[in-house]
Image (cartoon, rainbow, N blue to C red; front, side, top):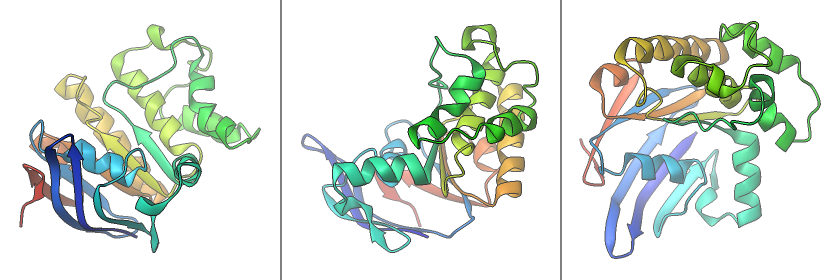
Length: 214
C-alpha cells in the first residue's frame, strides 16, 4: 500500500533522512522506533502529506504523493489519513463531540452517527459536552484517537501517542489503539522511542541518523 523509494529530506544543509526505502502492506500495524532526532517524525510527516522529500518517491496505492500539488495533498490528508499526536492537539474551546466531528466537517459530512459510535467505543459516554480541560490526559488522547478514526481513513499515523502520558495510561491507550486497529483493519504507522510501545505493533522498523536499520 505504501512504498518509499530512496527518500531524502533536508532541513537547510542538514540531511534528516538518508535514502529511505520502506514498504508497508495494507492493514499492517508498523512501529518505527528511534531516538529523538533520528528522523522518525519527519518520515511520518512525509507519509502523511504534511511535508515533501527533496529526493525520492512516496507511493500510496501506486500514486506518488511527493508529486502532488498543494491542493491534492490537502485532499489526501483530509480523506485518507488520520493523525494522532503526542500532545492531543484538541481545540480547547469546543466540546469532545465537536473535536471528534472535525474531520467529518472538513469533508462536508453532516452524519454524526460515527461520532456517537466512537464516543461509546472509546469509553467516553457522558463526555460529549465536556471541554478538553475537563478531561484527564488519557481521556484527551482517547478523544484524539476517535477523531483520527471517525472519517474512516485508510491510514492512521501516530506520532509518540503516549509520550505525554504516564506508563500505565500509555499502555491503556495502546491497548485501545490495538483493539480499534483489529476491528477496523486500518494501516497504522506509529513512531516511538519506547521499546514497550513498539511491541504493540506487528512489525518494528528501527531508524537511526536518518537510516532504516537492516
